[in-house]
Image 1 (cartoon, rainbow over the protein chains, first blue to last red):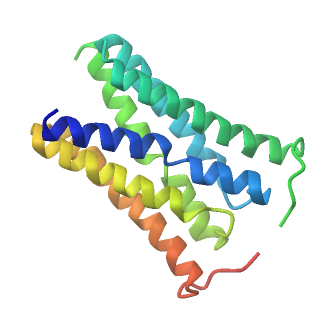
Image 2 (image 1 turned 120 degrees about the vertical axis):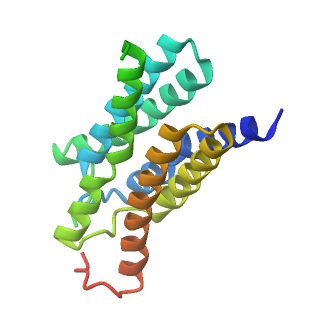
Amino acid sequence: MDLDQTIGILASIFTTVAVLPQIIKAIKTGMVNDVGPWMYIILCIGVALWVVYGILKQDWPIIICNAISLVFNGIMLYILIASRQKELPVKSN
Amino acid sequence: MDLDQTIGILASIFTTVAVLPQIIKAIKTGMVNDVGPWMYIILCIGVALWVVYGILKQDWPIIICNAISLVFNGIMLYILIASRQKELPVKSN
């Protein structure tokens, strides 16, 4: 595996899992008021477009990484929406 | 411009500007306690790696989008670190 492939894989992993600490923090603390939903709405649209791009290009790494990212950002968005609709037992600030 | 180029450009724009609403919310409200810094540390590393990848591949769209993303995520990370060190006049929850 040459250098740019290694760096591409590392970059994909970092950007794909980046939202995990925020999801864990939100679930642990139940506090999400300061986290804006718009970021995750835009991110979900963006990574969904990357999945479509990957399909058009038949580029499996792009499809897989962005599909995983879509799931993670979708989870965070669900937490934000549910907390604002008070479905989740979320502590208010 | 064909379909996959259009979708690639749209995907890049969405994922690059996604953090802007969170930056604006943080500056407007001064409340960032619920926003975890680890997400932005990992994102900054990830997009920095994408910049390196773009340089190795001489792929200017990848370099430009991820460099802008690095700046935006770096700003958000600075806001988070500064608020925790109380440099910024940030309201506590």
